[in-house]
Image (cartoon, rainbow, N blue to C red; front, side, top):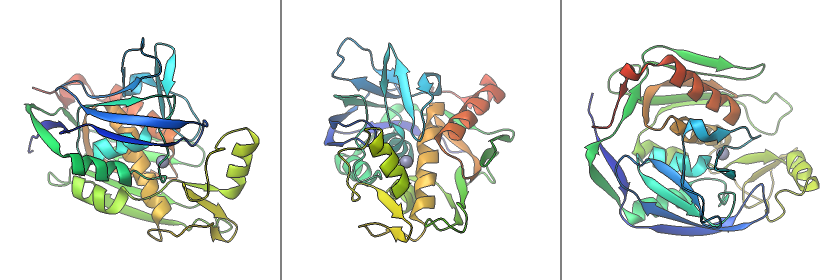
Length: 291
Ligand SMILES: [Zn+2]
């Protein structure tokens, strides 16, 4: 199997935006990082805090998002920047932000991917670590499941199939999609897919004081008759976004992951459970470490 070298970004990238859950305007910098340092998040508003490695060991339970925590502080909603970095095979990057949550941008990671591609990607001199799945691992709850099996063939390193069905009454269309994930397919087919919520969920969030800075243009909001004040980029944009979330969450394993993922209705909590199950079922020997 082809090995590749570790990669980082060529130049710093800056962006800002409002958050989905907490009510902040956040400024973010993505900085090039040394080999073997991985993806780390640093709270610039808490300068005494060390950067937090974006690894499953630091993941904490949250509803409908992924967060990491260390030293008494957390970084919320890391999944979309994690997806952008994993999707483009960036192994080392320091993400600095001046508050507790990554901005939602347009609900997708398109701006991040465009920013990274414009800044450029540099190859480093050390080989990238990877984990190639040796035996199937699956996790499930009452309504959702996700499993990963050994890669189907040596050429297809990572494939993700996702199926979604919220029932006939739902304004979100049921369907499924499977694709091989490469930097090219990620940038072209996944990166622009936006996160979505039901109008009733937005109202409930607002009642609890969340999402005050958001408008229906900052993500996809579905009312009973479909998407409100917005236009879908693909008819199956929601499924594509679920694949984006899977990529971001599975990146918490801390290296490139080769395998065939099949998911049904899976969300962040179950995705994280899969990462933990992979970690405990695959011995050190099945990891190809950075060398
Ligand atoms: Zn998402």
